[in-house]
Length: 221
Image 1 (tube, rainbow, N blue to C red):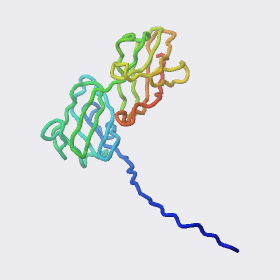
Image 2 (image 1 turned 90 degrees about the vertical axis):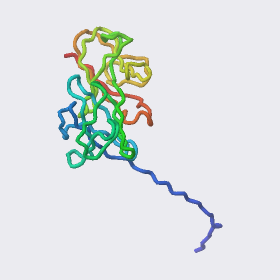
Image 3 (image 1 turned 60 degrees about the horizontal axis):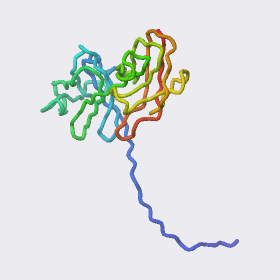
Image 4 (image 1 turned 135 degrees about the vertical axis):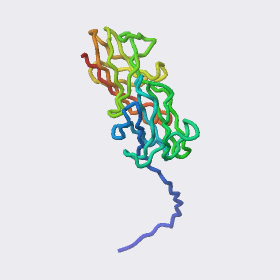
């Protein structure tokens, strides 16, 4: 047997660390009866940074806390200001108003924000026509946006924050899929009361953008 060797080659290898972000914190409050087991979960989007969505119904109260686990062993309340996190503070955080919000919590800086964030239905099949969205409410346990609305024969699309900047349209009435910036719409052939639900994977739209599709149901009651 013969062995043949090539000239040696020098390789430079630069290792990179890929951090895996995972985990949740929880948001018990008046909006859901202060039950830690059913509180909204905020998902880690960066190390120490959590984001999620919730809806506070009118009259439900605006106070909440932030818990690192689904128990009361350790939690944050308001500190020097409503925006500051203070460990084990008895003072509740306060939402700015009733409605739906994107909640962002930074445990690195001990700050939090609530940004108005509401998906809605729009179109000539809805009461608001093409100009005003009918807002949906967020079910934080199923991660589903929902609304029960009276519809008339016509078209229905989905859009964010009563604006056309982010909107989804469907290609037919059977697939239950709507597409980002699609000109199509779901056509309602018969007027009546409908339950509309919508799911979208918009965990971190500021960094990742909005997904190409969402899923929905439109069911006559």
